[in-house]
Image 1 (tube, rainbow, N blue to C red):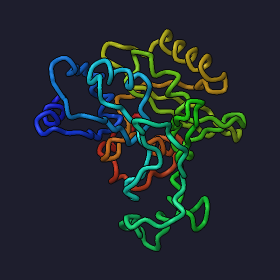
Image 2 (cartoon, rainbow, N blue to C red):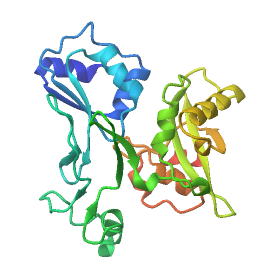
Image 3 (spheres, rainbow, N blue to C red):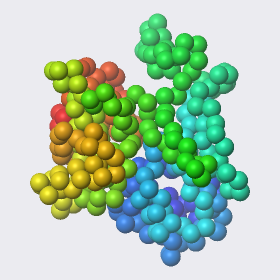
Length: 274
């Protein structure tokens, strides 16, 4: 688990780009290099791919580095650019979350997307003619931004709009939880029931005590509307080949809808658990 850090030390890496999932995996494995490995050239650790939760910020400075700046960045692989970055000596400034000008690296089409239907739905359906990233951010009083997640993962139980990232942040400090996924189940009466799926750390059990602890944390840190109507345990979550958990695949599975492009997942067999 510490191989990349030794490589960074050997070649003098200054900017170390990783995924949020990688950092979470290091924390779960209790990798601690700060006292045993020198990284004098390292200036920034840049995390991307998904929001980096608070406990993993604390873990990085507790176990990995004291001097490097940790930055959770938000951008787009296909545009080869970022919307939100870190800045070592000034406040973070608000940035456009929609690209109104063309980029040389923007793709023209998706593979096997005859007629460009999937491509247009992915980026141009919300605002015709304007490419939209579909991420939601919240600006804090400090001037910094918190990435709340994709706007297409917004739930609407009882007519109240909530973001799934709000629930993730409410339970991030519960030690028994390894990973979580929140989706909306479409009920027969036209409403949405919040459903929480969790994978647990070793020796943990999803008993009534843990269920109650999760519900209380969500109710206290969010609102009663955020509390899941159902909490279930799974062994793993569907992941893209970039390591991202696919909320949309889980949402389609629990609602009995077809899941498009199963080839994008490295472990599609786990969908049977949902």
